[in-house]
Length: 162
Image 1 (cartoon, rainbow, N blue to C red):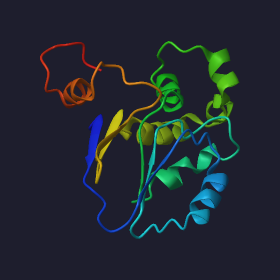
Image 2 (image 1 turned 90 degrees about the horizontal axis):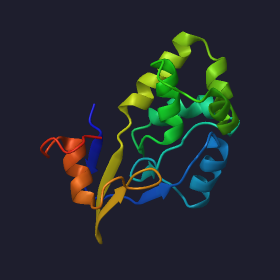
Image 3 (image 1 turned 90 degrees about the vertical axis):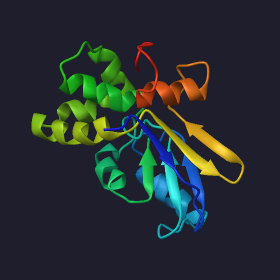
Image 4 (image 1 turned 135 degrees about the vertical axis):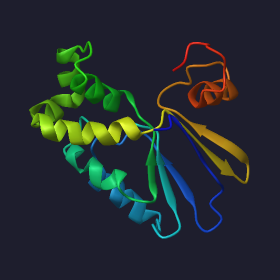
């Protein structure tokens, strides 16, 4: 799994970026229809937090399977991963943040979701006519994009890997 993903310029269609979806896929679909999104040529990039809080979080696997949809891992996907890996997790905060739907799933179902969440990169960059556009969830954890790219691709000497 690559924690960093680069996309070449989309010469056939348009690129769209969406913020936190939080399980509102019907609303997202309506917005895409309103702008004439063409899945044959257009691409949709998400800056993470595709699940929790909304009523349709379980639909995330359908979206992540689309060849035109690309998402970085947000903190809500990371919380699900922490739960499945039995890492330290503040469960009252996770439930209050919308994770109760995930905690109600059978462990085998949780594993299925987490397998997808773990494949989501931490950062995405897209070549555009205006130059590279970088996407992460919330905030870049390094002073520059080049440092982040290098750390995620393993091109830096032991500098506190992400």
